[in-house]
Image (cartoon, rainbow over all chains, first blue to last red; front, top):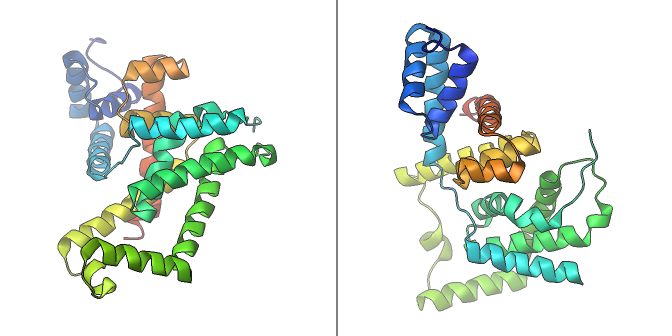
Length: 81
Length: 187
């Protein structure tokens, strides 16, 4: 039975991993099973999903590889001086 | 608190994207944002001898960047700067007109409201990320913003995958609490 049932600490980590699409089917099943009988973890999972949606809605603008190389070059030149 | 040492060789990879995001939400010009980030690193290098190790590298670099952004706005608000803005406006459109009327956002537009909300949330999130322990913040940003592979991050930080997920989980819990305090209570 312990193969199926997990505790709340494990469930909360699985909830976070789920937001990044990192769960395999067995882990997803265990997590779902735990949420079925744990109100706290169900509520945490909802908040976690809401937080993930907010994060996805934000426009993150990262430096391109070329921009990073250009900054690194300036920095390396300054360091060599 | 253990003394923090500066490692300029890793600055671009570790803090480049974070500083760039911080800057672009304030200056709204990608080229200028890149220049300001670059200047920040160079200024950090110059004043490295003054770094006492009381704060983290990231906090220290952000404080330099904030001063650079203030200088940037001072410059464009000076008379010479105003003339430069006017010239670039006129040269880009070939038309004379009221800059405010044509360039300022219409606050009644629902898209503008969304944009403002996004920006406020973004700013609040940046502040909350800055409050995280440095290791948590770096790993959270690498996984969530830079979308790096789990393996790559684990190798860089010399940690196992389960350690990484515990760190990301704790970072997210702290961020949710922080956002709840900073953002939701204000709105």
